[in-house]
Length: 219
View 1 (tube, rainbow, N blue to C red):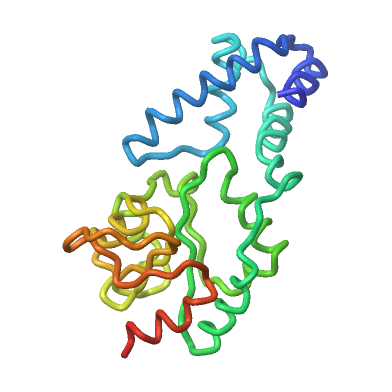
View 2: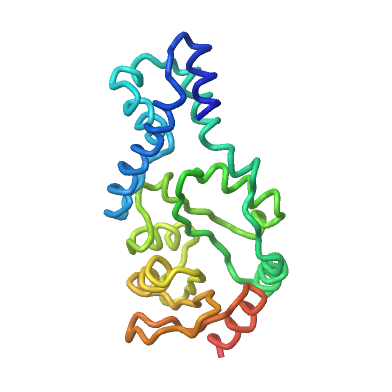
């Protein structure tokens, strides 16, 4: 939000730091309502929600150039303070790619857009393993809605019966992919709960165990 204040001031528009901080929180309520319906919007809409919470007239007063700068400022924090990565991820992906599997990403975003998440995957040397990446801000739908899985499967030319989804969230990943007709491996250090038809097909504590878990499913 400090960057927002600098950009807006340079554009001749004033916004107090306290007002921007409050607007950021209010935009979170807007996003939560949207996400609760398994829907998403581009991060430009996140930025407009913040501006509108400061002053309803502000989104119309911002030029295209200033808006681009605001979107960039909103999107880059994850590059400055990146998340940690499972150190076994690269070896697991390399092993699966070496066996001829087609790999894809299906991901909800929070405040960080898909374009930035791709940069992070590239930074960690992981992006090249994936034939396709699906991010919720770019397709307008979020896990656990089956449509985001279906979009990804269509993009790689696969059917759900031939696919395995790997994820760490019991609802978004396990129940979502199951509802889409896929098999599921749950990344969890806990014993998986019995969920009937929505139970995962396997569970691993880290991605190091993924190649063996896939081989077990195939056998």
